[in-house]
Image (tube, rainbow, N blue to C red; front, side):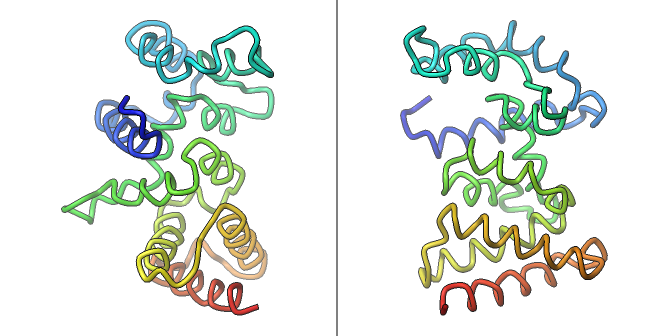
Length: 197
């Protein structure tokens, strides 16, 4: 915890994912594993990370406590694990982990954190098509390329619009059959039109 939430989330997501990289999906989606970690090894970390929310006078205090120490599965297990403050770090890293990038396999975490890690992860969790690693990586590579070129400001509404576009494409074609490069090219073309209009 350095005070730079964006950098801290990227760093902590990588640490948690590396530590739990051999965890099978059926266990990673189970609330019990996260509750056990949150109430033992990671308790002090969560208390420090969420100290602003752990005040009884905070708005929506009860939900903030629940999202800090449990996975909120009322709206489904997948979304619940993306809402929890530690499980979301793991799942964000899992979504973008690129073993082919030997220099920085977690490099795309910075693109998620650029618009606020917790809220961007929630957006990603609501899109089933981004659950496929190639689609997610292709999408984020296009965003990184556009941000590095400093052509346009890819803010949260722009990210949401890009995801909506991919969802529309998925309704018309087999997006799961497309390569990472195809997704990246489609996303770049979308943003060219998006920002020119």
